[in-house]
Length: 455
Image (cartoon, rainbow, N blue to C red; front, side, top):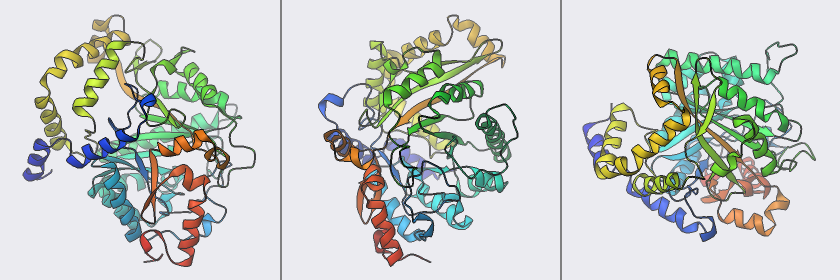
């Protein structure tokens, strides 16, 4: 329960001043031809940060891996150096900024250090999402619950696809897809953690896309539709030729080819790209936000929250961004979230009547041609509605960085790490040699923020 002083501060400024400044700075970077209702950079988010050097090791040997060849011989940065990264990322992103706890398999860090890292990220005002292959949770029952209870972890991303090498005790599913069975196992693990702690846990999943597993994308999306509420987001990431990725594997999946398969998985081939939204450059990151409506006796359906072919939806998005851009309750408890939402609505009471309620009515009618039937089924527990965000993120190889398009993408990069006091594009870190130089400095005894490795 936050203090009354904290609640009063939220009521006075439900969107922090530094968040507004961060959004304004991000918006200024967006060129005119990439602005519009489907652009979220500078309107809702200033970008996304990630740790680097937190654990440059992994006990997997995946065919698509962005760590360098010597990564497993690199000692992790101490918490003091990671603190400096968090402070710099917070200054860039503002309050409630997205932070990926990543760089190898971070769950291999000593438990007390991992707990401290999560706590520190939340304390400075960032929203940490722990990125993991998930096997540590399978091998160490209770670890996920410990992170939720003792560090306040609320967001996790679990990587599951056919490029991964190192799983132990894979489900025995002769004749079936082991990856789908593995998702069943994680669904049970996630559900158990939520029930045991009584706390919220938003879970995403990542999928490295190669020419070999591109055709399986619809099946993966079909699993998500049949298992609503397990994962709130899936990020498809076509593999780039960087790091330890097997030679020749990267660069074989085009953006358009991936989204054709996504369309098949979501709604039988309908062109969902007309509902796409962007965070930064469309060649880097695009997504479709929607809900999965599940009714007893009917096949689950994915429905986009905002339709790109409905001007009324675009007007609603623009109004929401003007009034509420940068607002988030993801680090709030219930009391703080209620105060923040109430403060925002009090400031903009006409939004609900003019845009909010009409948009909600349009959405309900899209969910079911007979809204009354859906509402009655929902009240009786025979229908449910769950959020699902389908994302594609496209990293660049060294060759792509050198092209005019590559430089344009770097100028608008939204995904950065802090290296020696500088915010560096993740693509530049991966494909431009910055990660290797950082690791060399860490071995030599000078890491990020000039702090030597070790405690």
